Length: 225
Image (cartoon, rainbow, N blue to C red):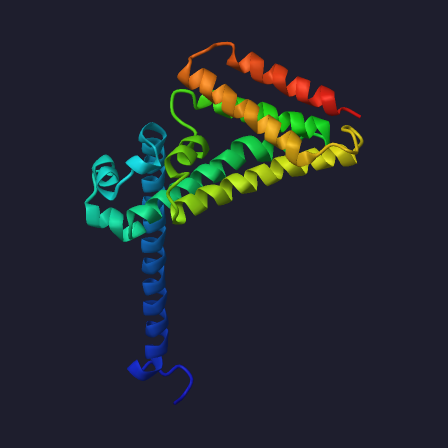
């Protein structure tokens, strides 16, 4: 075959490459659209779960909310359980984005621990008219073993470990006493958040926020170096 041969045999590899490229482009486009649809479903499911709890989620309810067929929603998740787990993970990701990551810009030690608590309190306040998946999920799934409960426990443990780590850094920086117990302090701080949620959401007490902040200051006062 000479250079410049334009017979079909010579052109076929180029045509095949173009077809493969076009096919890959279509496949990537379909995949992106599928990911976007799945993300939209999870967002809608999280909004619904904040009103009716994780137990109130179902393929049918989300299909109606999204104006999709049940089979269309099922194709993205495969089961109600998988949908619930996806919602738990999405809530955890948003919680980290709103509460944990902004606090990392604060100086190490006590300033960062304060930032974590302030962000946590603010997030709790924003959820008064909806619900905290961590808290409502614990009520719903505390006695229901399975993957959904496991996902909830895993995300809560991850967050509590981050709080304990922030406390430990405050000890290392000399801001808190060397004999302070990170697990005990984290337990007491978590108790303030639970009390704030109960007072603000159930009792509708406007004093809950100030009580939580005062409680945090009292905890630190006992452990300050």
